[in-house]
Image (cartoon, rainbow, N blue to C red; front, side):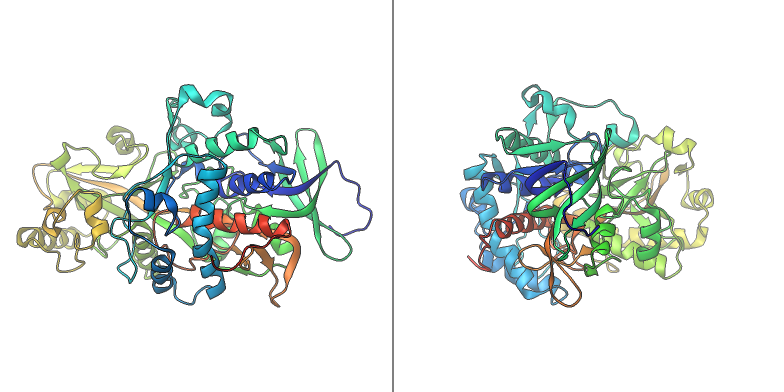
Length: 522
């Protein structure tokens, strides 16, 4: 909407749309600069998809890494990032992200007082500048009894939020810990207005095209909120929009995304498109294998300790221990090649019939069996019949893999040869990662192509300002997190790049709004 002399129901310096880690961090950065800030969240809980995350934040060369004994630098991180991402995104954008990282962590620890720690988690690519021990930092967990009233304002963990499990309030970890600690920082100031059940509907512009506010809807109806300095869109992507997923990514459903069904509906993409923003990477997501559950949702799955993954042809097609985004991309390629949308994890009773991977919630065999998503048999041939695969193809696949296991080397896909693959098995050699499939009982569990959110949206400049196709910016409008086109392009370089880059550009955006833009380096 564009018009002169608009009347507003509330006025702030900054309006932040969304309440994930990037959004709340941007709000905290704004209030620390003395700016009045309103956070609008359309659901009844803060946290967005960030609340589901493990909480890793990838910001090379920061003070926490140095304190905890990791030898790292911004220059080494930038070397690695460029080697992985290439020129898919602007050099200025990449440098702004990497060089802002230490300032983000300094603000987290020294200004906000949020306790953080380094935790080993390998970078995802074998490229110059890689850290085999990773360079991710995490928030200190929060005990439920210290969380106070805000505990029930934070998005619940995945088992309770999507699968009907009782809510576990004993401990907040990962993304939920970040959300609580950022909310606590915002609650400590008198400059933050935090609104739940408030949906952003439209960006408001003046006659010159400057974004001057947001039209929102809450239980009391429609309101116009003014933003004197700017609007920061950090409302996630469009992973839960069936229409946008089909249009841009040819995905058969939006139900397999890790995000909550009420988030990631594409509101930010639609709003920036409505003001003439340039969009990019709409065909991209943070992909991952996911286990399909009876309710139609799918849960992010990684760290396969045993078994093999086959497609609709009954064949292996990748190293099962690939970093999850890379494995997801292999699955996507198989779908595009006509191998179908069904994938199966085939394994044996080496773990007494338990699911041999990290999946939250852990699949219950009886529930999945009743839904046709978990099958068991005494032979591979019989198992193939249960899941609709060619028995000879699946048998050949298992026998070939077992021969590799006997020899101690996966000749097809080199499973276990990368430090990331060995990480989840606590293995020191590749041989430990190649275990045969056999025994009295074998199983197959249905996997699908999932994601941790889409990564396409508004193209931003180094200050987080939203760009138009002609290279100019939309005055007063900024974006971060999954509402923007990711600085990592079509790659996922390491654990915590989504949160780290979201925080970095939210930080830069607020500085620019305040009239104190950050330098490109240092």
